[in-house]
Length: 257
Image (tube, rainbow, N blue to C red; front, side, top):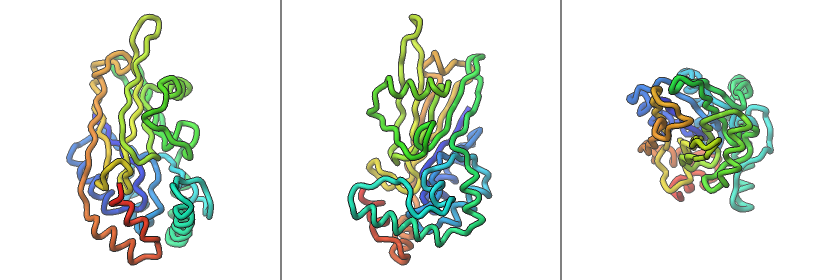
């Protein structure tokens, strides 16, 4: 079984098209998005249309929720006072650009998606969320304590948790011993399609391969994760932002990381 997972498009249509074209070549059994389709770039309407056209299941990101509900202020990440101001301006830009019918589509996205699969003749749960299983405004980082992460999965009876929001890709395999037997849980962040913050501007997504003959709970090699970094026409993106009313910061930060 092959599952493609991507997140945090942030209205970057050229990056999304590059990722989707690459995914199609891999011929996965399913594709999932972890939210934040919109805001901080110029192709808000086009990205919503693309997601709808290709019928990609997706959860609700914090930007999707804020923009979808016409909120002029909602939680988002920032590193300085200036970034707060630029972020508020970006929200106004997106609220004005995105049509009301497309905001309705964003509002309808679920907070999380649970997928039941059979591995090693046992039913296991894959959980897709944007921030954490409970909220799309919080973030999970790779350095979090194993006990904290395990509790998140245990509370949802999940074996694998897919999350975005940090714009930084990672796969953390959690090994535990329960009743004298080793068990495994996985947390996977596919990184960001449209605005990575992990060292490269290249669009990122994850391909997960699951050996259905093995049980992902008890066999660590039953689940493999492959991260892809893809080129796209970043010059067009930077020019588009420069020619819009968005702050140039949103073009510069693509190259900053």
